[in-house]
Image 1: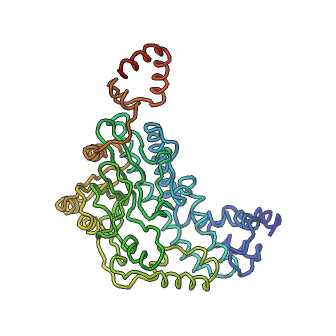
Image 2 (image 1 turned 90 degrees about the vertical axis):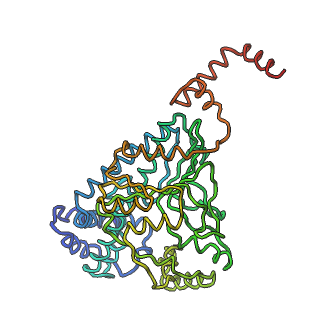
Image 3 (image 1 turned 135 degrees about the horizontal axis):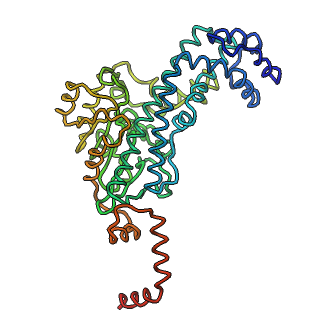
Length: 443
């Protein structure tokens, strides 16, 4: 493939009504061999991406549609506004999303087109037929869109709660991470055998709250004994958000069941209008622990299945291969109640973007779960929940001179950098008076 391949795309009808017309034309022009995309060198991969861009976009639009893409764009805009507000109020340098979500946020259409790159290559190389391509690629697109829209809403709720807390209490600050980069993702953060928080927020004059997103998650392990102990973390139920009073830097407690410290608050987020009608199969909680040897054997099996498969092996995929067929099917409201009964939090809330039927709301609230529905992207609908979280704050972080000065001045909110400059200017203008005061204090 070379420049001729790209120039040939000028002859493809841009307004073709169906992606199959583009497929027939490209298949004749590209002449790909039946080999996996991993055999493509970087420069040829880029050429292939450009040559098939029209086909992949046409297919995405057929499966997802313009309306859904526009909705995704609106949700992304809401999240970006929320993130910008939070960065300003807390002085956060940046918010780090998962690679998947970050890619989707930057360009939903481009992200979805990337999701069907391999399927498109296999299609044009006659490795799969058009009907198989349509089935597999459609499923991949719908899954990616659904997963990312869910992540956007859950992340918006998290960031908006932090923002409301920082605005309500005034002079809140991010104690952890200390570097000022708020991480939504947890990739590589548990290699030392513990589960750290996504953030610890200090509320001036009240105390601290520690937030954990989508935990428990697996920790590092060595031999079969380690794996057997850590297995409960692989198969544990995983609520959207756990909140702890004070500064909590690790929640792992393998001797307990569930294997984490009891949370003070759990928050579940539901973005779909019909979430309460859906059901989910639970298998992991009924499965036996893997040994390290079994795990290695499965990984080696992946090698023989093909280099690309082995390179893409993920631990959660391997676990899924080993799970036994026993399962239990639960409606989503039942699953939410199960979270409460298993983790026994001090309090629990459910945030629903859309209205929740009164019978479902009654079912949840009779189990001690407060329902905040019709939230949409309206921050006012989360203020009561934020106030409840603020009431849990306790302890304190390291003394922060700027917060103490702001409290003395009676400031409810302020620009920390502006306050720092003002304090330095005041000190500079009153050096001698300050020295005398220090001498007096020393005696």
